[in-house]
Amino acid sequence: QVHLMESGGGLVQPGGSLRLSCTASSGRIFSINRMSWYRQGPGKEREWVATITAGGVTEYAGQLEGRFTISSDYAKTVYLQMDSLQPEDTAVYYCPGHLTYHGALSGQEFWGKGTLVTVSS
Image (cartoon, rainbow, N blue to C red; front, side, top):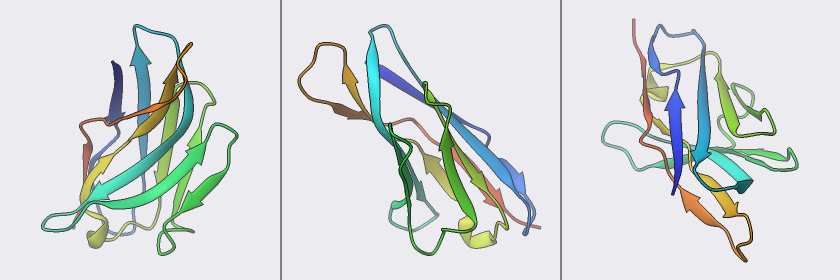
């Protein structure tokens, strides 16, 4: 089992910034293929935010590019820098990772429990 732990959420005023972190850990050796951020706002469907591959290629949901930046330490942690936050960015932010155990032929996806971001004055 791989555990993904998100952190960095909290209350921020409109126009403010937050940096989320997500660290993957396991008792087994694994490699990361890609990690992503998703979010689910109150009463909304879960939506994809951004993805970063092991090679550092990034993709963003169109409406978020420019305000959100995904990055990694090329080890086991991925970050989401969120700027110019607005109330509509209020959501639980999740960090799914697509990972491959050492020696395995295919990867698996694991999800963290999420971290709450609230944008409000």
